[in-house]
Image (cartoon, rainbow, N blue to C red; front, side):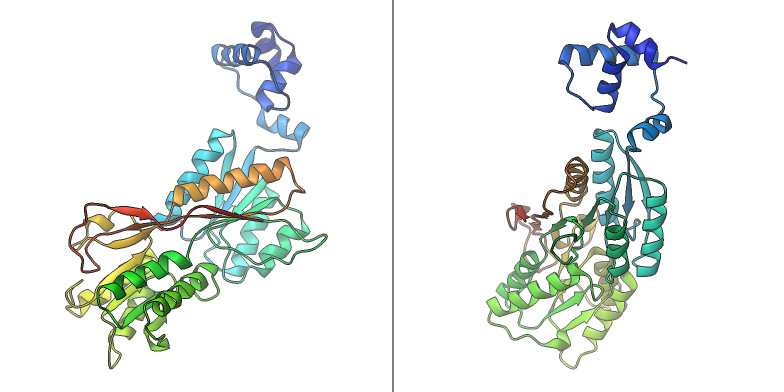
Length: 354
């Protein structure tokens, strides 16, 4: 098996130079760097990751804790994280906290014990123990998709966050339905306590206010971010004495549940009820009618999370940042509109908050 000495001899450089190229620990002239990489390829040299981690205290691995990995939205986020991590020479260890605060704390500890260099976490609705553990052990971490309010001040942990815009895109969906003449617009909201749920409820209320419509708490129900919950919530709305004529569902799983509830009652979209959903997904274009939706930049969210984590590893004491990525409004036909020639437009520019 070839060694680093063999690579150095073949490239005509020192062992230290080979180490700097492979570990990216010091700038190396482009020609020299390429000679080392060519020698690595020619000899089939494989670095000893375990030995390198003992020397550098780095394992070149990232822990990723996201719930509902089977959800297409999180699957696409995972693809963005994985592609960006591999591009920078990092591997992934993945765990599913199941949106349970106690289990979340356990899997994060497990990842930490595996000596990952840092973590990317989609926090639960009650992330207190998670934040306390990461802060106590000074684990470099980025919160993904869902934001967390962390106290500021000297000694407070520094957590970067990356999320999609939530309020403005939801207001846009409500405004679109109001513009089509709907006056009773329902919302199937997500799990209480999640920042995404709060933001989309805020957007719902802003959209109603902008359209001159009153907020009616009987038209807002929680589907707990799951298909079964979305089905129950939609059924509850349809059972109202005066049901809504239009509906906004706050994630893709609850959209599936809402469609089940409508099907079971023999109701059509958009004939009996207009529908817009937060979260686009691969087969939304295959439904009849095709689903009008807000599309989140899921892969970009994953890539941005990796970028923020690597920047944190390089500069542990820099100020924490929150990056907000724009969504896109994908105009199809479930809202009651005819086919559109322009498929999508971005709802807001990217924002970085100190």
